[in-house]
Image (cartoon, rainbow, N blue to C red; front, side, top):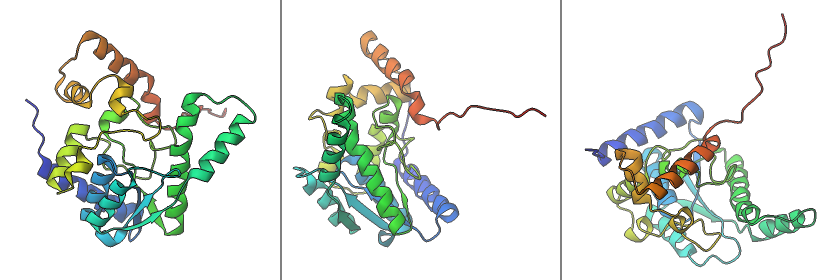
Length: 247
């Protein structure tokens, strides 16, 4: 039976973060987008433990008025991290208009514009402060491709990519994060639905399948397997043609 040692996971992950920064940004700050959900909250808490609160900068990026931005503000207060708010509303609106002027954007195009602009924003802040951008995706989301290519799917380093949603929640509780952030219904904040509504299955079902091989009903299993296969490309670097010049 699978057992998750949360104490060891936290210790090992913090050590990994410290080692990564020692090699790839000694003295640099960690820049992280703060959505107010469990992933950014847990990732930020791990960064604070590994690097110290003074080396973590949270970036809140609402599009216009964000009804749940109080959750992001709660996390920043709870951790005591430096934070800035950059509203991406005008940039996202301008991009939508520009695309619509030359072609009819699909619904998925519209949904993916904000996360790509948010990643551009994070790198703009990071470069300005000599920082490194934290990716906040988890294993469960990555498994079924629930991220935006070149949006929230990227970053300079990724503490949570090998933890399932269930494990991320356990880490959050062990780190003493507010329960409302840990159990906040996961949502991309873009389409008005929760992650699980969009996926068609729960993360608990997915995590049991990933970690313990517990297969859900046939239809759900087929859906998970299909999404996993279709989205594997998101976890790989851009392929390059292996040209070899003649001798």
